[in-house]
Image (cartoon, rainbow, N blue to C red; front, side, top):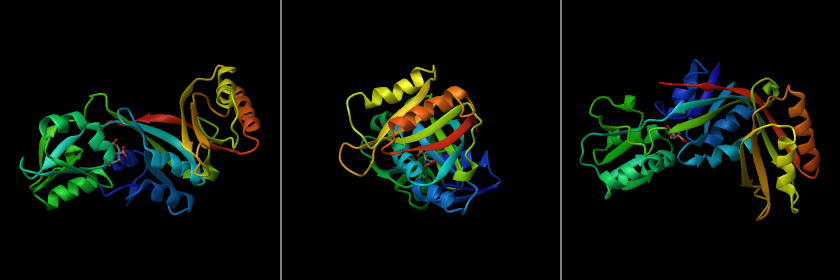
Length: 268
Ligand SMILES: O=C(O)C(=O)C[C@]1(C(=O)O)C=C[C@@H](O)C=C1
């Protein structure tokens, strides 16, 4: 099984991807990962979708709405960041924007004068720190080696910090089996009560929504598509009925069934 995820080696995405594939290759943007799976270059792609402190990874939401892929699994993993540098004398902290945000309070308290630099991934920031003594990185502590030391561990603002990743595959592999289902809904309509109708399709059948998120459609200002995750599998009659109702509401637009899947918890 060949997977692609956010690189270079040593990212949290890499750690999550190792749980589902023996061979892992890298791209430096989540859109490129989803696109590579849609194009058939890889069997699986692993992308971060949501963090417990910082919320959605909007690039991933937009990519799964844009490209023809399925969701085959979700991986939830705790995120415990370390500060890595050649010494305590650095001027710049380089990391993924999500990681910088997850450590905001620590950085403001301990290094108020450091300049924050957002890079493609935590591992890319660690690489910068390995090459340049004036740069520190934020990432998994196992990335330390040689001159690169762990200056501090567990620097995230909350100990409960966790990220949810999606394992995506070819659209043809979408499954009806699993405890959760993801849909992308583009109603292509705007009238009072539209969102309420969408929600009622699930509430009326006693289906719990685990997430609903609107994203701009890109077509015009104020026009949205909705990412809906709910706690039922498409093999269930109540889920099929709810989706049929959603399809009816979105008859002027479209509904993409990303598939039903289960959750895997990965500790490392
Ligand atoms: O940069 C990495 O290590 C990633 O895998 C990306 C990512 C993210 O986009 O949320 C993954 C987990 C953490 O929340 C921080 C960064």
